[in-house]
Length: 144
Image 1: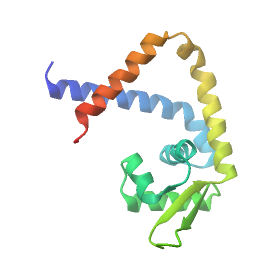
Image 2 (image 1 turned 90 degrees about the vertical axis):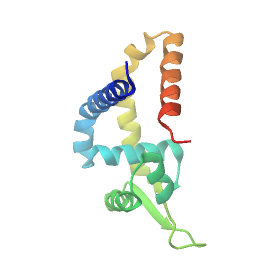
Image 3 (image 1 turned 60 degrees about the horizontal axis):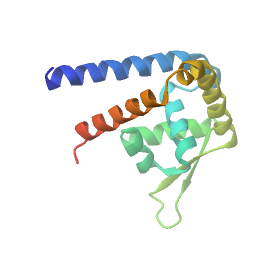
Image 4 (image 1 turned 60 degrees about the vertical axis):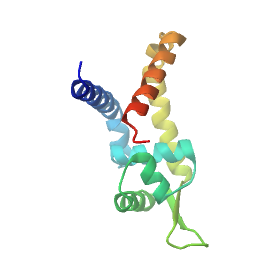
């Protein structure tokens, strides 16, 4: 298999996985009046804690202007807080509010219940191989 065929398959699998998860979460996104992208932003903040707009943009591979706009919308809904750093007002830190944490907890609980049996039926060796495969792909596709 040549590289382009491999890359296209990786893209296809990643899209299919992402689309499946997005479809599962659609009712929750609708309920909380957020987009799937906004859910992803909240999930990163849930996992990582407070981040600057720049760091959040980097983690999600997004332009800082787009990230700033999304975080502003999330703040207007009461899910995040944006605070300017005193040492440099150009730097904005974003964190989850209590309401934002509750939404992510609800959605994570749903996903855990939905996929728990399938996940638990995988043996530890298979789980390890899956992670190793992603680590290998990351090394292959990373510039460094």
